[in-house]
Image 1 (cartoon, rainbow, N blue to C red):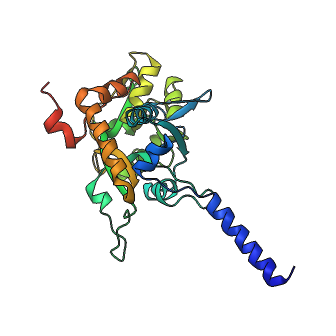
Image 2 (image 1 turned 180 degrees about the vertical axis):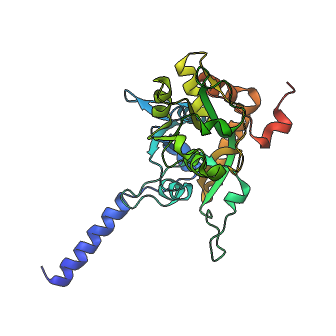
Length: 300
């Protein structure tokens, strides 16, 4: 074979390899026609999305199954490993695909719902998230502390952690916060773990006195501990930035029709109380997103 023909063959085979392994985000009509929706959820993210003995479980898993059922299609999960930031997660799993595996999902859950974030621009004025449409906030998240009331009488302020050990997930906002706030006075008492689950286990083993993490996670582990000795604190977090934020979903910008259909499903779940019950079934504290609170939240 001539060298030019050989090079042409290699190029053609390379192109075939690229295009055959690439799956693009699909339109609403394509999803209905194929009878399947691919939903991206985070791997090993209790209580939202995780696998136990090969079975997919969690709040986001149940939510994705409900959405698929309402659309009249089957659901297939794309298990996501978190990148350095949300921008990377959206790029790798929704509109471009990872360079090692050029496939993407139709819908991604657990995406920040924030107007300022969605309109973020880079240093030359281009929209950072031009390729994605973020929508349908389904709960409001915040930071929370769970503590052992046999070791700490009360957590009314963060000052108590100058004297008591508190666990955090490594490379998390709680870690950076506790290591730096108040001139680092709590840094020596801040103990780092590979996950919130391991931190809670250490607290249960009396190695530390408290854990700081996402409210939904620590409330879930509070239920798992099943002991009145472990309580959720009611303190605020001075100088942490956002005290709470909304969590929603995202689709590729070209396929907003899917976003509109999913929004209708989510809003019905919120209005009927199904969303709140979904969180309660997984023993996680639920807070109604601000977008719906005025119109839907009944007086206490």
